[in-house]
Length: 367
Image (cartoon, rainbow, N blue to C red; front, side):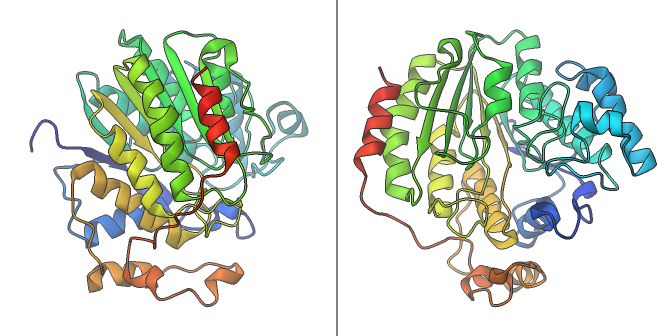
């Protein structure tokens, strides 16, 4: 394998693990992306790595050890005490107790920490199970129990890096990562997210001690508008930062088909962002949000293609179509999915007008 070939970190923990039948994270995601990439002939044993479980000591680089211990207790008992619920928000506010409530986030963290090790001297790693950007040092938040991006960035800092960019294109503000590095001049956080969407942070004038730029975009945000932000603000800010490493959180919930946002991107927009940063000296790309199994799987498989320079076919082969047809989705969109969700990866582009507020966000970020 060429030394500059991207690596893919996955895990079988995701295959049957869900947050519960009624939860938005009931849908299969990482396992489907892995299966789809293999069916397309894009992922062999040379590129694949199995994510290890982070140790409690590794998690404690960012998280309170007492909180990590509470997650372990919750998994062992499959219940949570009132004291732990109140203190750590486990089993509350969309953060349920489920069978792998400790192992799954510890494996997501372990995968990102492996990615940081693998990129110590350069290179690219895709870790679709990572991207839990809302996690707080001592509490669960926004479906996120640990904050694996913060842990990965801290690992890079511990290696001696001092110019890191965190770029987040999830529909929800990357609040946990911004707050983790607020005022730290070694880390610049950039977040494109839906204005007014939970957690209702990340205003355009919120700069976190000078080390953040936020782009709260309006409903209907389209491909042309993301391209405008990318070229008029995001890439100039990245060039000015001269990063030794970029961490891209590539949440798929900003896609038009996602049920938890009102944004209107196609997966082409995500792939354009990935392509724009793919030659960074060190690059970790993770997943994040995304609650429609077809849109997530097709988007993140395409991310892997872009990182490798693979050609995305107009129509997927039968083996890949079978992976997509096997998906089940209990929302209305899952009862009669359009044919192209089974037969293609690429969405139709969603171009449109660039609204004045988008140009204003770009200009404000450059001030």
